[in-house]
Image 1 (tube, one colour):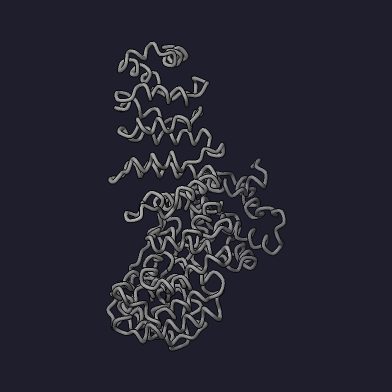
Image 2 (tube, rainbow, N blue to C red):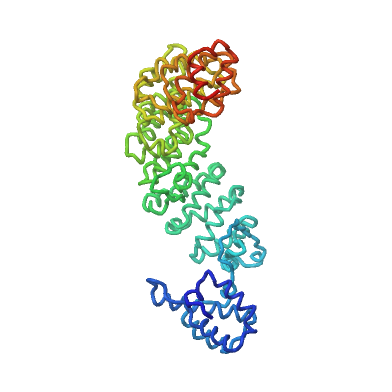
Amino acid sequence: MRLSMQTFWERRYQRDLLLALEKRWNDFPTTIRTYLERQLKKGPSFWESEKKKEYVNRRACSILNRLYWLDEHGCRFNFNLNKESKKLRKQAPDWQPKYAAHAASSVESRGGSMERQTEHSSLLSEPPDTILQKAKELSGTDFDGLREKDPFAGLSSERPDLALSALVSNAARNDYPEWAWRTFLYAEARKTDSADFSAQIGSHISEMSDDVICGIISPISEWLLNVSKGLLVSKPELFWHIWKRLITILKSKPQNAPSNILRQNNEPDYATEGLNAPVGKLAQALLNDPAINNLGKKKRLPSFWKKRAEELLHLDGDLHRHALVMFTHSLEWFYARDPRWTRANLISFLDTDADDQKAFWSGFFWNPQVHSKLFEVLKPYLVQLVYDKSVEKQGHLNTLSAILLGYWWNVLPKTGKRFVSNAEMREILLQADENYRVQTLWQAKSFLTGKKADRRNLSTFLTDVWPRHKKAKSPRIFTALCELAFTDTEAFGTLAEIILPLVSKVDKHGFFIYKLEDSKIIDLFPEKVLALLCAVLPDNTSEWPYGIGNVLKRIGEIKPDLLKDTRLLELRKRLGI
């Protein structure tokens, strides 16, 4: 009774308040119940910047919820509830008594997955012209119970013939409910429909008006992709008729076909966007055309097929980029079958605006296959990409460094030349930033540990290619060089001699030394290990890596003569061993 009105009507305390009143209400004296009734009928106060009409509605709903909940739980009032509620329901015409059932529900956060219930037996006895209405009445989401009821989804999967009949029945009345068509076309069962049933669906889609198609263009394009292989064989004329309809709409109303992926921080991810966009679906469906299978070595892509691809690539704005990213995902495939068309219609986008270039590379790095002939064409663009800061943001830096190093690494057997010369590779590394140089050393390490490792190639890389400029010197670079040297036991002797002039003190992030404790490298090259440690260990012993003491002891055990070496004596002294 001493609570302020603000506290009395605070939503977070409502559950506790109602449960307490429920237990004690009928034991209170009449005077106390009368006072509490007055408080319950006053309702909450205004919120800041709340409009009067909104407040009147909210206040009435809040009062009704509490009064009906208490009445339902056995609390008897000294006033006529029906009379009071009639007045309040004029102020909140949309309120219903069932809303009061949740008045004492917990408002604490909770989690759980939503269970989708698709039980649809009640729809089976309905005539086709009332199925959708009945399905909508039975649908709904119970957030408290974490249940979503979607009987039409069950019907679309288990009885697609009946679901299609319901859609067609409504279409006869010029009624095309988007929710129903989306549910039907997105159903997983559409992927396994018979060719005849897919043709039935396609015939009904082809009869839709442009406005109707605009509203469901995403599920239609998804459906067309799913049935493309079968439909292009059984009913190619129907497939291309629907294709033509969609292309016409995409040209005239491009704003109706965005990707289903919302862009984060306005930074495009064209691979993901294209994969989830209507145009991206059409591009994938086009690649399923049996007309481009088994072309043979001398046959090029069919002219009619290339015109279809060009239709997508000539669409406005991001729409053509959604197609571009799907095609450059298979760039090597295109180039192997029709290099002239590929250069003119795909690679040419590298000379256009920045967004086109991003879309091109997004698809390319999604599936980075590049054989020698294609590499020669892409080489200047790939080199230029090294200096593009956005490449690292998009996660392509590692793959880019692997491609360029790989084409330096592979020597042509007949001529002995490289696709990327020593001078070109050195200039790339010199002009690139530190992240790219570190990535390249990591790639060199992976090449060294590969099945066909060429240790001589690595020696050549470090002696004839790796830049000596001060730009290429930093604790991160020193650490990466040392990790490279310690990667291979057999190569360590040679690599240590090459790397020693290139390195200096590392920082506390140089944890490569932990690998030495169980390594045979100390047994084989104790003196070279000592020389490298002296060069890279930081001045501050607190930054020395864990286990360094065991490494120094082992060096002395393997080669006792080194116990008198001033370098080892100094390191052991500084470590206190």
